[in-house]
Image (cartoon, rainbow, N blue to C red):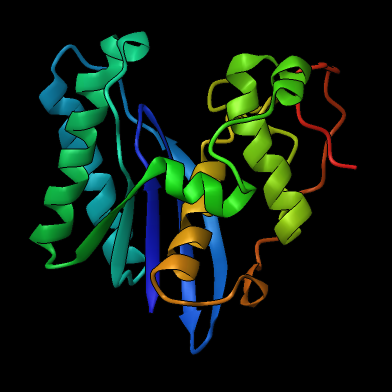
Length: 210
C-alpha cells in the first residue's frame, strides 16, 4: 500500500509512504510550485492535474491532507489554501482514491511532543522559522531523518536555502502510520538518502544538525 501526504500551498510539500505489514517506510518526498495566474481557477486546475499525475504515476492507494485553520494573520492566503485543498479532494475522488484530513496540532504533538515551539526555539530561530525548525529537530532526534541543507533554484540552477515544504508532509506521513495504522514509531523509517550538503552562507536562523 502506498500513501501520498500533502501539505498544500503555493509551494506544496509531499511525501510517499510504503506500508509493508507492520512497517512504514517513507520512500520519497519533495515539493512543487503552482504557477502564478490572475485566475484562481487556473491555479486550482494545475493543483488538480499535479495531484492526479502523482496518484497515477506513483501508484498511490490513499492520500492524506493537512487540515487548515483560518487565521486573521494569514487572511490573504486563506481562500487560496482552501481552494487548493478542494482541488486535491476533487482529484482524489475523480480517481476513486480515499483520503483523510489530518489535524495540524495532532500530527505536531505526535512528532515533537508539543504543537508549538518552545520559547528557547523561538528565540534561537525567530518566531516564524521556529514553527518549521522544531519539527525538523524532532524528526532528526526522534526518527533520525535528515534533510538537505539546500535546494536547487529553478531559475538559476544554483543551490539556495531549502524551502523545506516537505518537512511537514514527512511528519504527517509518520503521524498517519502511527495513529491510524497502529504502526509503532520504531517501525517507521525513511529510505530517502539526502543529497550531500553544500557550503552555504551561514545564517543563525537555519536549523543545524548536530
